[in-house]
Image (cartoon, rainbow, N blue to C red; front, side):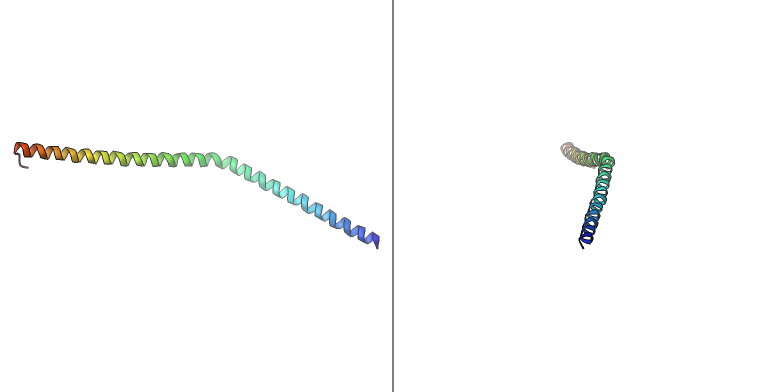
Length: 91
């Protein structure tokens, strides 16, 4: 009877150790995979983020230029209109 209990206890302990060892390697491989994934995707993410910021800045710059161009165009038209009114020129 004692031999059976010792055998069952050894079986339980060995299966628990086997489960821990297998899970340890699974978790270790998973962590290694995540580290490698981060290692190779981080530079691409940084480049993508930088390009996104450059695109946004370029778009804002284009919008500012268009607003300034339209303002200058309107001012030029107003000055031309004032000049024509002052000189009595009809269009």
